Amino acid sequence: MRICTETEKHLLRETMSHLEEKLDPQMFLRVHRSAIVNLQYLKEVRTEPSGEFTVVLVNGQKIAMSRSYHARISDWLARS
Image (cartoon, rainbow, N blue to C red; front, side, top):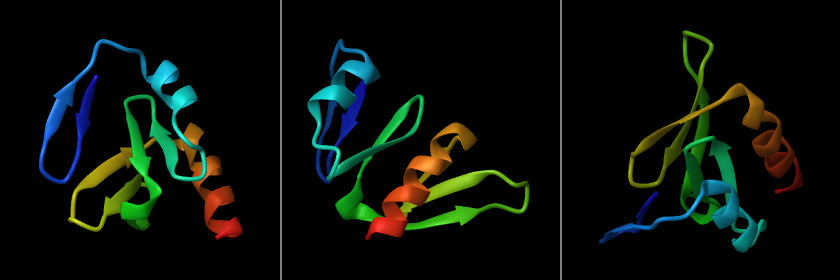
């Protein structure tokens, strides 16, 4: 697994599920089987013309969001 911060990248030998369990669900959200985002850096959620969903971070990075995780982010947005 690769963890990216503003200035660094780290490699860990751990599963996404295990890391997700350790993180604060108020601050981090899994958006794809291969991606967890820090909600402080979430700028927007887009629906692409192809029907796919994309999470855009404040630094402009785009992360694919799978349909199965879309409900999670919709719930979070409704609560925010």
